[in-house]
Image (cartoon, rainbow, N blue to C red; front, side, top):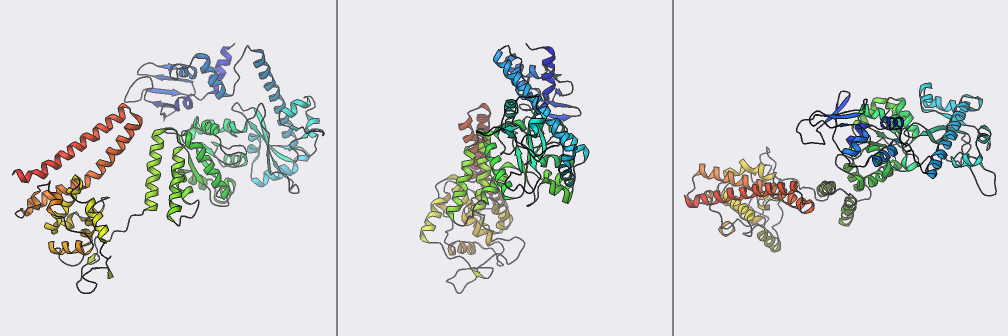
Length: 627
């Protein structure tokens, strides 16, 4: 039976802003949060969430309720389903009439009693004579009395039966089931933790569910440095984050959550004033732990040591997070200086240095790119192709189609910039004489570039490919040919438009040759420009290449002022078209993938822009012919 007292306790255990923030973008507004109401369409926010009072309210439509009401009205769950889901998040047991369920709950409660008793004994041992070495270790770490008390440090004395004697009121099998004792065949059970500094591991309600122990005696070379409790009915290490119950309130204040590699790092960070800090427990960050983090903040920060192990841990976290990514939810990653963990950095450089690093946390996609790029040498084309294959394999794991598409584009752009770096432009504005220098004489009439021989003329095959690509086979090719012919006809205009053309991707290669001639030191003349093209294996445009266009700047009787204006318009169209075509292609691919009203509207908008573009080009190209 669900009593009012139990339901009140459930509501108090759930962060309403974190719950609503999973599907609604909230903004901090004083002691409340605000947003555009998720229950009705509005342009300005009138929806508020108050964690202290435990309710949400919309001043526009009147929607009002608590965490349970949110799950039923917004998420569409039945009342009991909503209660069960919230109870799992809060770490509470739903009262069940089933005798077996009741027995299991009673068993867990009895194990909680065992763990609480063990914690009290560990704390008492730390303060006793046998805890002197542990107290000395804490002093070397710089942890003050408040930190020691807050995190519940204790000490497990030496002796294989010490804990059993201290907790003799509990049956042996309960101590074993709680993970405090180890049972082996044909031998007596013995204490798991001996001669170790102890830290309690607590659940979302602050109850002790497990322990972590750090060895103190240096003579035990074969023993693990850190030892955690095994999985028990109370403790699942893959579903537990150390310090979450303390970090959650701090995260609400700061708006961030920091994940470090170990629980001693958490304590060091908290001692330095960074309280919103958690850690996994001896394993790589799991999918369940990532989801737990996203319930608190949209983009938690993962802080890894700067060594090789830290890099591997970062990549494991990335590969587990990729399939889970959803809009506005991701990870940011900080890599500490090599050889330093959080405690070392804080001691050496102070808390401000750590805050500065956290403020420079990098995006998941950036760290993924750098990790794969630097994973193996990339000396051959095959190596580079392998890099692309690895990147695309990561993209294929992303379940959200929008995010997968954006990651694919981002990583392909980074890969293209790396594998196919843009050649340095030979045209250098502002450096007279620094451009292409055409000099007669030796070299069979070839020019020179900065005193060095210009590239040899292209082979007949390359000339054939160039003419095929930029011949009369398409509107853009014809427009390119017309503009090149116009610049040759009016060479004085070349300098005016050279910089804009140099920034435009995927243009006819003949533009680069013309741009290089801008600052060659000699006068720009039509015949000379034609010679430069021929000497570099290209041909000046023929009238057949742009036969569909009737631009005035191509005519023999064109007026200089009018021709300059018309040529400028043609160049603007030439520059604008690649961006428009690329945007339309992306919109079309998105609509084919999603087939939503939004994607269709975007595709149609760009199609209309392209039709307008073609109409402008057609009107301008035929204006001279009709005049």
